[in-house]
Amino acid sequence: MHAKAFETMVKTNTLPCNVKFMLEGEEEIGSGSLSKWVAEYKDLVKADVILVSDTSMIGPDVPSITTGLRGLSYWEIEVTGPNADLHSGLFGGSVANPLNTLCEMIAKCMDENNHITIPHFYDDVVECSPRERELLNMAPYSEENYKNSVGVKALRGEEGYTKIERVGIRPTFDLCGMWGGYTGEGAKTVLPSKAYAKRPTKTTRRSLFW
Image (cartoon, rainbow, N blue to C red):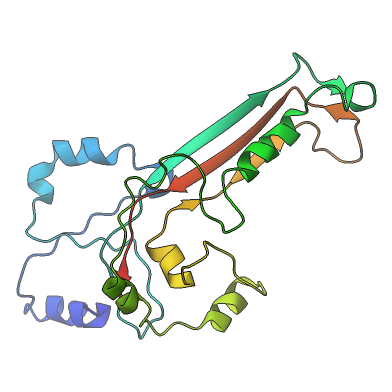
């Protein structure tokens, strides 16, 4: 329903049903308080239909329906090497650098086709049917406009799937942060003791149809 139409129906008392709004601001950190709140106030939020508005639209004039959302698994990885930071000139080449090792570990998690290589990773991923994929790709989507909007010259993703399918129905494996060693101004010849990375994996199905 368009916001203006909803506003008019409220003002004229012609809204054919009761509408409850629930605003929740913890989605990006896992909504840790939501389940407890809903359990405590389940009578207050009881409804016949639930519409989740934390979804996207291709454009303001293109109606969009989200039929499912990908789940999120968030990990923090710590790699430890020597028992203290070392001088890279004296120890480099003989002691494994945790930053290098962490980079190697992350790189091996995807192959040359951007397919995730972790054993059994895809076991519970629901595959869309050819008809569903066909419907998904009927959306009025412009790859050039998409690239221009984010300032990139080319897109990258899992081979065998379109951009819409990669975002809508395929799991992802993205590094969100990585740190270790010396990151200040200038140079410092340090072989770090530890290296860290934060990474969310979105593993369940999200299907968008227009």
